[in-house]
Length: 425
Image (tube, rainbow, N blue to C red):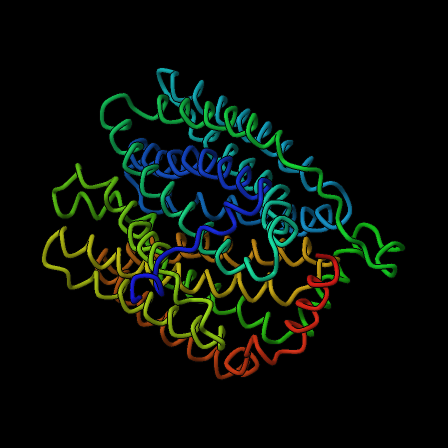
């Protein structure tokens, strides 16, 4: 009985062919992307041996992600979301090929690497809102929690395998092989995504007259009015900005004289995330999603901060796994709030804003963590990040009490979304 109450619910995979396709393609493309996610900072660290040069990856990705994330959200509310997903796979695969060619050169050009990072951010900004807003159209309202947990498990599983595979490939064959594998993954995922059904957005009558900036502005105004949703964005942005340590992992492996552990450092958080996914059967019984988000974000920061006093690489990996569990817990309830309370006619634009909230934070986090490490030392960067994360999460929770009060069983937006789903279903 106890096992049944916590184990992963596979109902969405049984009930929806479209979700099965999205899930399968997502595993493949996420696996390849995680390989490149590890290979990019590794190659720059190898070429420059500089904290700051690695942190610049986040800086060059920031503006394209903001611009194209908002525009991609608008497109997701106006055109077939399947077309956006397919176009994104083609573009990202082309960028991976460019990185492969550059890595094969006798002296890889670091400018090309930064331009490729910018291009990846642009493509991600255009494609991701369509991917994120597709879920409520493929599964029933009652299956949303289980589908969100499956997506969490899909992302974390790919993220476990991706860094582990990347670490091995980088050690044996180098960056060119890692980028080449990513290019192949985009091709395979493209073939899978071609089986997705056409998903033309549901458009509210008032949205028919909006286009371009006006369409984006309408979505931003909706987000501003929803203080509970605004709180989810602010919490994640705060947690990632102050306690996102991935750019430091190559240097952390070096400090502990454990180059073999680089892939494990990247994978550890996702092992924790997978543990959450596999044990997420309890999640649908939680009513106060905002409180779960706040608690999980604070615990994420605490685990990251404790890395500063870890005595060995094993303890570091364990702390990162704990942090990953709470990060995925926070992400699960954020996604659930979004999918269960935001109407479909603005879902794409909200997905664009959501993508910015959980993408800009890590980029800023790379800049903060590497700059702090350069100025104060590696361990101090972890310690200060953890403390600042907890403080920032507390300030956001106090400033936006609607997030703390959110109850899915009584929230007016969630109830309207349920009635709408029941009617269309």
